[in-house]
Length: 91
Image (cartoon, rainbow, N blue to C red; front, top):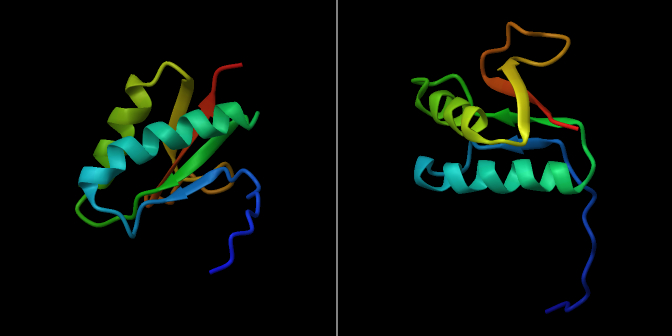
């Protein structure tokens, strides 16, 4: 096994497709914190379209987090994409 550590560049995107809803709450909290610590202005959570339960969970977490200024469905160029939510952090 290779013991070498490779630093990862900060990412402004979290894809929840491969995670259970029971894990998503903590993942979203950690992702928001990571974006703030990395100096990113915001991020994007890909929750998928499906039944909407992951979207609702995502929105609840973003609404409750004091680091989040605002959020909306879609991206900056495509607000009609309801499979992801983009958020802006406070300064």
